[in-house]
Amino acid sequence: MCSDMDNRVEASIARAAEALFATQRPEGSWPNRRPTAVLGTAGAIVALHLADPARSRDLIERGTAWLVSAQNADGGWGGVPGSASQLVPTVVTASALRLVAPQPTEEPTRRALELFESLGGIEALADPGMAHMATTFLALAGLRDMRGSRRIPLELLLLPRRIWRPRLSFRLAPMVAMAFIQAHHSPPKGAGRLLHRLARPTALRLLREVERGENDRGGYGGDNWLVSVVCIGLCLAEAPERMVSPTVDYLRSNVAPDGSWHIMQGLDLIGGSYVARGLADAGYTDDPRLVRARQWLRGCQQDRAFPVYGAPPGGWGWEGRRGWPNFLDSANVLAALTPAGAAEPGGQLRRGLDWLLSRQDGRGSWGTFVPDTTLSNDGPCPAITAQCVEALLDGGLPRTDPRIVKALDWLPSGQRPDGTYEGLWYRGLTSATATALAAFARAGSGDAPAARRAREALLNAQLADGSWGPGETGTLGDDPSRGTVEETAWALRGLLAAGLPAEDERLRRAAEWIMSAQRDDGLWETSPVCLHIRRLAYYVDGLIGNGLALRALGAYRSALTARPVAEREAL
Image (cartoon, rainbow, N blue to C red; front, top):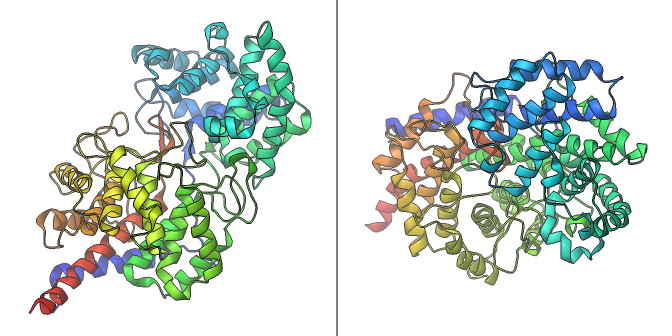
């Protein structure tokens, strides 16, 4: 006989699944709301101001007004409207307003710059790249001199790719753009000037190579912020018009009706893979609607190499069939495809699994874009490594496969002293800790010391109401007593994978919390847990949050129904 909890979990899953299926597109994908972005908007108005001031005057004015309306009461800006103020969005936006509309925005700019200085200014930015970015925008606005900044060595690109690729990784395009901006404001001298001039043709050629791998002309990474930075760099470097104009056209085509720019294109694939796996774990594997979703995901597999990253065909990126292939999105899509088992066409699945295996680095870990990178924002990453392990196990690799063993041997090295893990692309500690715990358990290492420490750290982080929040490295301004659907779902699934029973009071309260947070329309309110710039700018992805909630409730339902079976077998 089903308990009241069984019935409630079943009803919650059914409501969420039908709500998601109701919004599914005919070809199998789901539409994803692209959150408007402060950085994307600030960058766009500067780029258009420099590259297309006459034709884009109305867009610049509307973007300016939108930024002023999105300013927080303390004078700053966060990654998205309404989020807590952070250093980089605040200084970039203040600089943008000062440059494009100094008189009308004098008061908002003054308040923002005062807040920036009160929070420590440039010196408070630990990441050298972000400190340089902040300095650059201040210099564009005439608020700071760049002559004291460390010179960006564009001549690095004259070396063989095997040397600069692991050092630059996905930062190649912004590095080139920033070097061009710096050279405009603070021209190199002596040998540096000669080297910069020699490297300029190579740098322009590499930017064109990146653009040729994109879905849209001028759309670097499908990211309006990055496109803006590249546009500014090309404009100040007096690059050929055939390179500048596509970035301008891209920005003009992506402006939202309210005058803002969204964070990036192509989030449908990332969120869709989470939803597809959530629906599979919730019992809908054979539903024709989910079959269509898997077909759409397979169709997004890339059939071309991405030479700048040294990536062969066979992976996935957030933009679909073109764009930047990466390990995280590829692992997520594979996780969505593998539950179909023999019903899933083997050729593409095998190709994707082989692609993922080819991207494992010498340490046994996975990062994001380039194996064996030395760039901290690329890898190695405990959360991505754990997700790759699970995807490969789902795809049929045995636990004893040397590549699985090597990944499991590496995971303890990424653990913090308190037992937690931090990932690259989701905020805080909860997501990576729960993901690592699930990988340990799935690989048969649930009793390893690192797994036990992760399990205890996760249990100790549960909030009084049964939920989880980000942990100590969450978004600036987070309420430490407030949990989120995403982080609670990550934690619940991780603890269930580690073998805690559904009857455990802590897990029951977590499941109760997720169900109580479900809206009347069957879905959940999601939070800014996704990272646009690590520790500095976050965004919301509603599909990811709802997919995670469904997957956690599906795992909880399986644990509830498995107990009677286990008891019968024990008799």
